[in-house]
Image 1: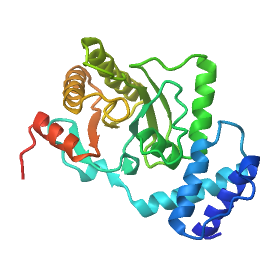
Image 2 (image 1 turned 90 degrees about the vertical axis):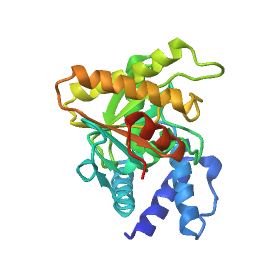
Image 3 (image 1 turned 90 degrees about the horizontal axis):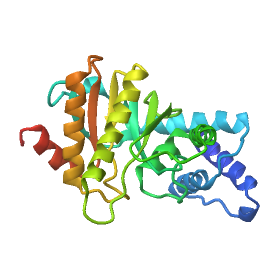
Image 4 (image 1 turned 60 degrees about the vertical axis):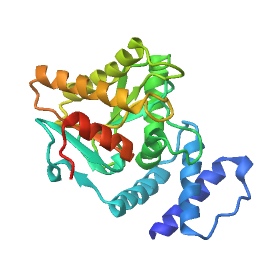
Length: 261
């Protein structure tokens, strides 16, 4: 099958699962098809699925990842010892582990086409990620506490692992407890990375999106926590701060002393 044929096959399979969507027409436009497939993956509950579906899905997502391209850590220069800064799409990074800013359910974002990192990571990793997370959370029998983290395979992403952490939600003034919970997110992920023999980890800007943690305070907490960890850790772990917005890049550049061009 061509990439287009695989996409249509996957859409039809997901539509067939949902009686409420029977009869929905598949658009002819490629981008609209891509959005429909992603939306159907977003809303799909964590229930069993056929090996045939997963095989075709993996082939499709693998080709999509190839077309997006990847960025190797070896192609980047550290801004200080073992610390890197890079602006771009975290799902294209070829590192040992990337960090996902998750919610307490740890099942990904169910809002179709939502722009949060949780949605994008699950959409590109594939159906298996939600199924794997569901098994973890069923065994745990309670939501993931704020400040802690879980590790999963990365499935169809170029990284090896995904570290899912739940950051604090800010609704007013940031308290010392909020900052400590955010620092705990970073420490939990760093410890998990070392325990699983990762040589590199890429952090997103935890809690700064939907959870409304102020960008400057979040970055300051992240840099302080990572520097402190690396001073004590002897594993040689390399840490990449991944930013997407210009405001975050500028804040991290200032904190890390990156010279202005």
